[in-house]
Every structure is written in C-alpha cells, then in structure tokens.
Image 1: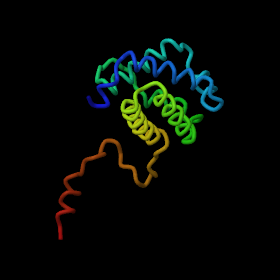
Image 2 (image 1 turned 60 degrees about the horizontal axis):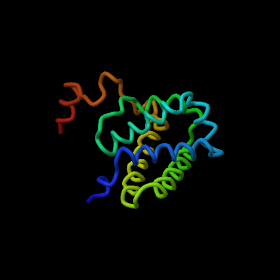
Image 3 (image 1 turned 135 degrees about the horizontal axis):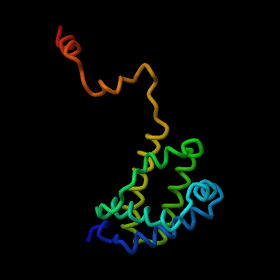
Image 4 (image 1 turned 90 degrees about the vertical axis):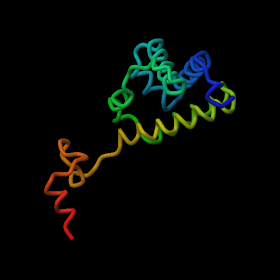
Amino acid sequence: MDDASRIDEAGLKKLVHEFYARVREDAELGPIFNEAVRDWPDHLDKLTAFWSSVMLGSGRYKGQPVPAHLKHKDRITPALFDRWLGLWNETTGAVMEPGAAAALQAKAARIAESLQLAIYFRLEASERRPASRAGRLSGKEIEGSMRP
C-alpha cells in the first residue's frame, strides 16, 4: 500500500479541521485568517475539497487559490508561509500515519512554493514581453536567429 492510499476523505476532513483550529489560535497566522475568513464552516469545506482534489484526485475543489491569496499579498510574508508550513507539518505528523503525513507535507511545500512565486515574483519591465507575444517569435525574429 503506497502512502497516498492511506489518505481518505475522513482523514483529510479531520486534518483540515485540526490544522485550521491551530491556525486560528496561532499568534502570527490567527489574526490574518480570522480577519479574512467570514464563514469558517464553508471555508473548511472548501479546504477539505481542495485537499481531496489534490491528494485523491476527486475534482471536488472548484476554486482558484492564487487569486484568493493575492487578495492578501500585503499581509502575507515568506515568514508566514514558513510558519504555515511548520504548523502543517506538526498537524499532519500528529493526525496522519507517517507515510501519509510525508506525502501531505511534500505536496504542501510545493503548493506554498507555487503560491509564493505567484505572489512575489515579478519580472523587471525590461525582461517582460508583451502578453500578446509571450511564448511566440515573429517571422523576423526566427529569420534573424537562423543567420550565421
């Protein structure tokens, strides 16, 4: 039995509820989450659906995590991502079997990295290409690149 097969809907629900109970009480994360989340039961359902989609391939999550986090970019710092991951690792270690915890921790680290890139990474103006040309070369550019 692989590590992912030890993860199920009931375990994810328990994990999400326990984790966000800890987040809400955390001195650093609590104020941000408690201000941002108006309906905790709904938010916990969404987060359980998110982790179900990510870990079980259920397709239950229909949201957009990047825009949801971009709304709070002025308050979210890399240190807070580290704090979030630390609490996640503690909680997964306490709630899940070791193999499942490791799989969830690895996935969360990749997601955190992706979110941080979306929030903090900005190309300098000189490095940007116009959106209409991104990923495409014009005929003149192609011809120019073929000349000796």
